[in-house]
Length: 98
Image 1 (tube, helix red, strand yellow):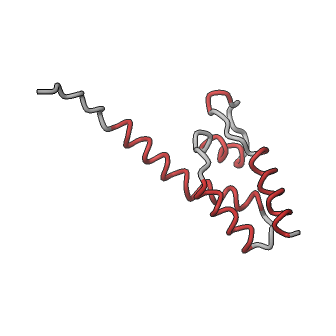
Image 2 (cartoon, rainbow, N blue to C red):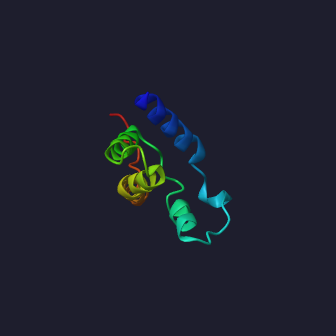
């Protein structure tokens, strides 16, 4: 019964917290809104899901929002850094075949 509840909670969290695009969002007015807009372009990964699952298990299936926000804090800066590095690195020109 417990895994079914956990699966339902994760399904609900993933549908409610669907990714949004920053350009479509009104300017944030609260701390939580600023947090969500800051991570608006972060892609959800299995690694983040596993992190959230372990967090929920450790907290007896409580604090889903806290676990979600913690996962975003841990994994989104890494994604942002990778995206900035990719933008900063110029694309290598195709070398002609000899």
